[in-house]
Length: 98
Image (cartoon, rainbow, N blue to C red):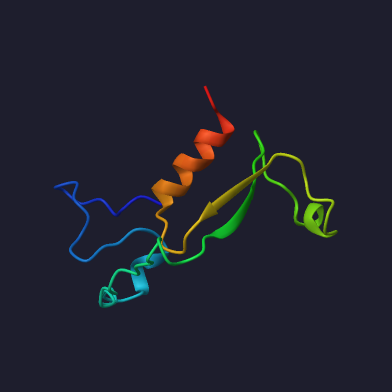
């Protein structure tokens, strides 16, 4: 749906396209939380099991039986405060070693 046209070709004041038109003003942002820090010298890392697949997603029923998970598993030992960048770099490093 396109915005209503007028002689200046600008949408009228307060016009919002799509389903957001009737939602009202935006909600205030939540207060920022303090960064979660883990002492990596004293804290034991956790095991993150990642199952990679090119060209699609695994189906939930492929994980129904313990011990018969899909192939392509990558095991990463990491900490609770690991960033998404850190995890993605580890996955790329193990998936594409060249």
